[in-house]
Image (cartoon, rainbow, N blue to C red; front, top):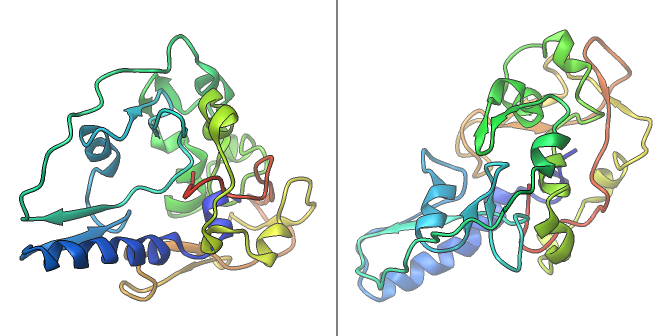
Amino acid sequence: MARYARGRDYHQTTLTRLDRIAERLRAHGAATARTYTDTGPIAERELARRAGLGWIGKNTMLLRPGVGSWFFIGCVLTDLELEVDPPFATDHCGSCTRCLEACPTQAFIEPRLLDARRCISYLTIEQKGPIPGALAEQLSGWAFGCDICNEVCPWNERFAEPSHIEAFAPRPEGRAGGSGSSRTWTRGVRPPLRRYPAGKTGARADAPQLRGCSPTASGSTSAASGSSPNLPGSRSA
């Protein structure tokens, strides 16, 4: 299971924090202050780059100097005039290709170009219906999301730190599916994935959530996780 899914719903937690910023903007005269964190059709990574927060890595993630990529991105759309930060213009990936080479399904066509149809995160969360057999055999134990291209990144290996935000800490049931677990998560059929109606959790409409496990079934995979049960920094995959 991907690290972001082991704590509380990051949509709720992050939106609560963003709402505090929105309130301050309104207090300073903003007529509009609308918050998003993976909850609307917003190109958050690109906006974050334009806001000077970091560069887009070869794994298509936003990377921040001295931090890495283990963090959530949120934004507040407002009509209040603010001082504009310059876009982040430099690339600090260098000649490194570890993320591209580590992907079990070879989802990267080239640096910064991802074929979502082969991405484990897409296949185990977004795709409707069974995972194609050839790809199901390459999931490397991931049942809900994937952290591989983040885990192998030197920026994360060097700078990632455990989060101080309690809501992002793994839940007890999340640890049960940790690295080395022999439990299996059914992915060939839909029941283990619950989809919440829009507005119920703060997540996007029809967003799947891992509900539980069942014995092996067609398309099932062993539950696996990253090298550490702790989600680094205000961070996620």
